[in-house]
Image 1 (cartoon, rainbow, N blue to C red):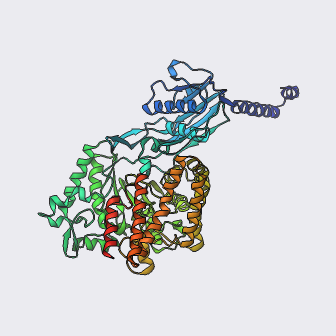
Image 2 (cartoon, rainbow, N blue to C red):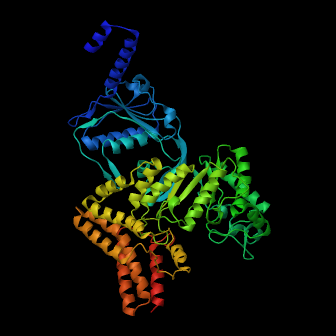
Length: 638
């Protein structure tokens, strides 16, 4: 203050301006430089303050923060609502009038439906969401082991903010549904904070079995789009068992025969009766499920399209079967828009419809879900010279010129061999950023979603994918290294080296690999691979397998307790799967003793898979059915 007194003795207007600036800066620094001693020696003077009429999400956020602070420090902070009185040491949760009283200056519009702000104001800590009702999304419910979805409109921003505070400021980690890591501190001091965080994508669906856990899914900030009948709905709208016998003309003409069914055929999209039935069915869906906001009108899960004269004529005119599909979808979307203007109609650009049409544009209430199913998953798509990947990039560019309503169905597992390694961590970050630049709104990432899961690094990939979907600036290497050290303890160092070694092999040997090894084999050899058991995976050379074994041997020796050892052995099953599959392949052309030895090793491998709860080795059949196929194949070779 002596400095200000000396200035006032020689007062001039210019000096007055300087005085005001100094006072402002001095006051600002005093306001925001205060350290918050949240807990001292296991005792806290702070209270968690909710809005006067808190939502269920705000109540949950308060309980979770209270529980976490108690686990970390031993201090139990009381939870009150703002009408019970304000104090000098508060943690204010949610957007509420009390924020104005402490001059928190939170802009709710900046936070949108899901964003959050974490801010220190004097001696107070604020974790706030926006002031809106949030966005419609699906919520997972379990009933007697059966998973179902309900749809609600809610803002999870304050809960996400609490989780971010727990992770980034308190050091908590949650890398699997049943594995929370809580540090212990008698003292918790919070430095000056002013954080605003909003998601980079509207809907962020991480479709891995571990992420189906509702609580862990919230921690990951996973959102489930409010779909009714998620995908491949032609067979639901016009079921073949109901219509094919009496009305074969409703179904796709393929090689001179009318065919329907999820994996066999499609619909005849130029038949006016098919349009009428589907339009009525979709309107019925909307009326029966008012909470859902996205309804899928999408092709069956195969690459065939109708070859009748009318359909083929439009295909030729549009330059792609997607034009015939989009004209059909647009007609339904027009009807829905007139009665339900807040509802979206979703369709796929998938397999034969991936290429955009030349004439027809999607209606404003139509979302295009583009599916890069056959691309190389080893490299960022923009720099990959794989033909299917280059074609996809052209198709994405084409669709982005037709509509701003593009979602992506991204693939992140080897679907015929769910345990096989798919080292795609580097391309995930690059491709998600590319999607954002191309105007993609939402991401659905399909991994190993089978019961029991157990695929290659499922928990790590669930975590990393969710973090990237929220924040494209996420440091992939840092998240992966931290995951390794927390989830695997000391064993994480060699397992981490294994993960990055696989990525290095891709660069060093310029390898390509998709989610479909059979497709990779055919592209490389211009012929179909031998029948199962067969795994085409050039990444796993003899040298790589030997080094992988050495790293897992080291990891098992470093395991600090039975829980860590079990996790290491579970992770090692990916390597063991490759080894047993390669041995089975070699044994097919070997002696009877070779086949018996391979089957014995395979049987032991299956036993260990079941110990770790793995129920599927591939996308459709359960593990016992896959084993039966292998036994039949090996027996036929005897």
